[in-house]
Length: 167
Image (cartoon, rainbow, N blue to C red; front, top):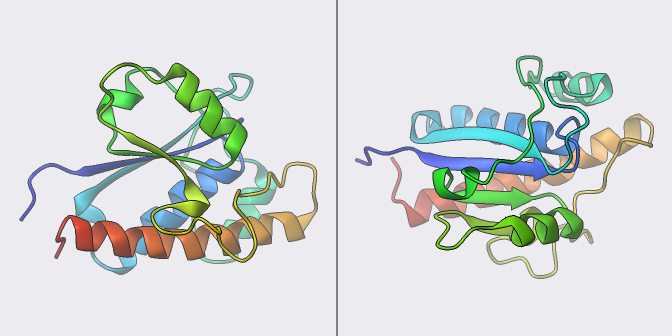
């Protein structure tokens, strides 16, 4: 039995669409497997303009359609301490990954990786290497994000469950 929680941080640009969706999906999948007590899951953005806001209403609506509640989340920006506090930091796209790598301190605790390609998916998922930003799209963009995030979260959770021997 593991005493310390595995800490997961999902990161996108504004922390109102993709990363809150990933946080909610990952949390829901961990709960479905009765593994949620092993995790601390959060999300953040590399940009600062949405701090304190709830997730985008379209993201909330799409997630609610799959019985995932994003309403309690509030946008925040990545903090340098996050690299020491979290075990995994998942970037939703390559720009976010570059931004994260540029601010990464010496000797971070976190593994900072691209969400759709980790752990063993160099080719991504369903033809995508990055979670596309749905902000300027219609409902179909938010549904695509959910599809990609659900698939990736399931595989990442499988990997972490094996790696950490969770029960």
